[in-house]
Image 1: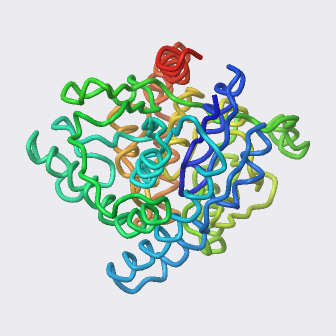
Image 2 (image 1 turned 180 degrees about the vertical axis):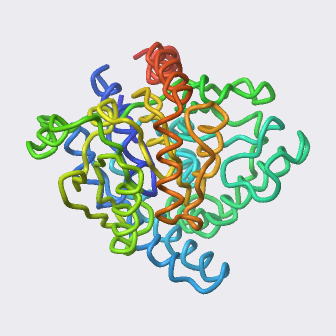
Length: 405
């Protein structure tokens, strides 16, 4: 079966699908991933076909940081989304029998599936169906507004996504020869949805529709032939486990300021550190700080004392898998949700919002993280539970049962 995975956004929105795609490929399917051009090497290096989608998410995040108003942010986002329509059209017409879609581009994926007459399966990296149990990631307002407030806030998240993609969907439907308008299906009548995170981290809400499942994580695949850089291996062997510090795809253009802040915090906390450059362009030097590029988290994190990160879904899962405590420094989108979840699970001190980040605050959070034994004990407990899960298996089993493969 030819399977097309459609995803948009930063590296954390793509990497988990390399693992899921690799499992599908190993089961005998032909797998392509439609993602931005900057991820061609990531996708191809894992043995999957890359189909390009227009757009540069790194430049979009940089533009957001310079925007003078929320209206400007919305305009930037809408321009980015509108450009995706032609890319999705090209990706699907190159051939597919089944579409797997991330939450954000799902309106485009649904239109493409309708045009081609092929099924579409939701494959979400965060909770993305409204529930009374908690506000969805990205919800606005109070943290705990009660069941009805949670449900309303979650529906507002989905509605904002649909409004953002409305013109792109219209463009795509026109290109694929579909009627301009399509009636939205009630949530309970939509197709299957698999959520790729651990039920030990976010249990499946009892009020989700029956076709929605929480499977466990889809772990990113390591690029074929990957080996750790000698400099990193030497640094890890030269002293006690370091603290990992990285902001992933966040804060592009703030590398100099953040690098100075991180260096001061590491010195104050009295720890060694591995600093990942990421899109911010972090740097470091000296006997106790090593700056690195992209390194698979599943290899690096178990060798660390703690992980300081922006609390994106993928990095959050990788830290939990490694059984190490965290210092969450959320920036935007779903990150405050995961940061709060880490604290609630007992594997992290209180989140340190990015706008409140100072060297002193970061040093204090690192110290609290590495000196509180309960954080590490709880992280180890969760890691054992997560290790027993096989998130990709549920997707493979569904495809096998529905399509005989």
